[in-house]
Length: 339
Ligand SMILES: [Zn+2]
Image 1 (spheres, rainbow, N blue to C red):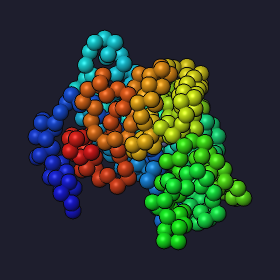
Image 2: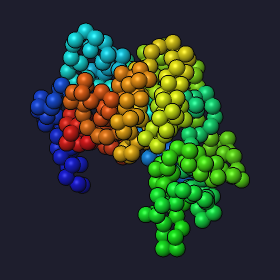
Image 3: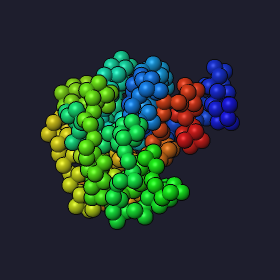
């Protein structure tokens, strides 16, 4: 057991937890970052396991804890507090989901409902209502199936980016392809994905069902029950790799499409692949402001200390499927320590 695991299990002992809760910072806003809530057999699952944030059972346990200890709010609530010149309540916490997978509706939504919790879902709007897998899932699938022959790919002007991942024979291992793709200027990324796709078999329906995006009916039903929708761009564009025109268009269109579909204002954007430092930059943030967003969330771990100052690059607490319940509770108590 490593030091942090040991520390979190000590802190969460029944006699210690109330003491620790008493000294935790109640003024931080905590934003939880989920992608998917799903039960799968990782040995045979053909897509990206890293995007599975929790099993259904673990998510239920986490929400039961959140419900008993935190004050769950949305970005609409945070904006309302600001408008009234009020600080967010103590122990404010926002639950967020990125991408827009159907499992958010099938598994997470009923649990949120059971505990009377609201959450924010960031949608990549081009995918909503389609059966098309997100481009990074399609790529993960082809690589897992061993179908991509990287030696035949023309990396074009971006060959240099691939340099550090090439093996001794100068070949880019297919497992490292995604490292290169996420770094390419958007036009090059699309060109390369198109090249990879040539001659590839379509996804079997059974596999496609595992990564199905939400439908607009599901989105609307969640909104009717108090859930909030935010933008995750149109095409899951890595904003830092897009031209200013592409970035502005994705930000504006995704926002307009969601607002038309759910008849509610969109206040927040979640930057795709924001764990990478090249995904967000000052120009992207400026364009986010110009597109009318009030908040932007990143994927750097930590608490929000000052909402007003940090509002366009808010830190979140990443919840991954291997986060134990003790670690989850410790992360929420001391977000800077257990980030
Ligand atoms: Zn995403």
